[in-house]
Length: 444
Image (tube, rainbow, N blue to C red; front, side):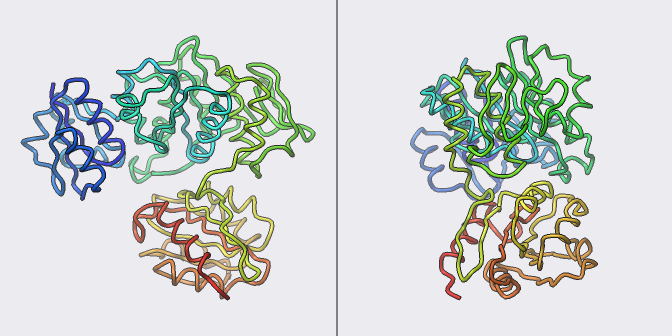
């Protein structure tokens, strides 16, 4: 069997290592430059690779292809593979063939990294043999090949779900569905919704599905899914059939069994984090974790880097790094949690965003806006009418200098961009790191 891997980053190289271990003839190809550490991993195992191109004669003869989630189906070589009927899989789908580990999978437009990390944290406290995989942690395929675990906690994007077919989540968590990545889904929200709902596929009677019961889309979609799993919905306040909610200062889970703790003990602030905590609690209780361990994990979880991360207070200004806010709903959650006037940093590669959702919060909470991107025209169209001071910038240095000029003592400078980072930065992490580095070096 010949397996071709498109994309030689964490997931692709992991898939190549596992495939070689299982006896496949493996070839790895990347249109960009492959990082040196991944080249070393491939070379050490004698796996053939190329960079800067996809040589079609070496790709189109594959029996199967594992594709990086960042590569769209419209990419020329992928389109040719699909046209000739070659199976194209995600790394998660491929890796799952070779493990019988319990799979706890989390998706959603927002909150999935926090919830995934929180579930992993609680399972570690419980002494479980657990690995972290998907969009965070190490490649699932590489772990299955070289460092297997009994349980995996996996953060899944819609892109990964698109190329998953036989995979089954033992515990699936769907936090929410709000507009995101619409540029990859023909600007059709229903296409994106259907992608997210794929986390339910193949679930059985002993499987668990945890979801936000008040989401705009999930309850409407559920009647179309006949999977015979146990379904646990959670809500902000008590509601009919809700497995978890907040009430009278208490954090309450009713299913799979009763669990309570004071809301004040939760380590993560904000309504959006209440939902993340409810999802994590229901999932880990379903996984058999003792209530006292769940309570400890919810109380001492330190949070996630680049998600409402306090970057410091300098010169009377508070700096918050929310670089993970790559869509409008994530920025909405960030603004909702702010308690001081805000200088908001927006911008990057737009993914079909509708900014009208945050206009009331911007009007109510923002002192000024700083746009940081190659093309800020859509941001101007959305916010100029509010009459707030606005600065256009095209680098982190320009951006931060403008932000502190517009801010007043006691304000929060909030990086919550609503957009992808690829116009000016390597990735979301690079954007957040540059923000924190500037704050660390700034002397007013």
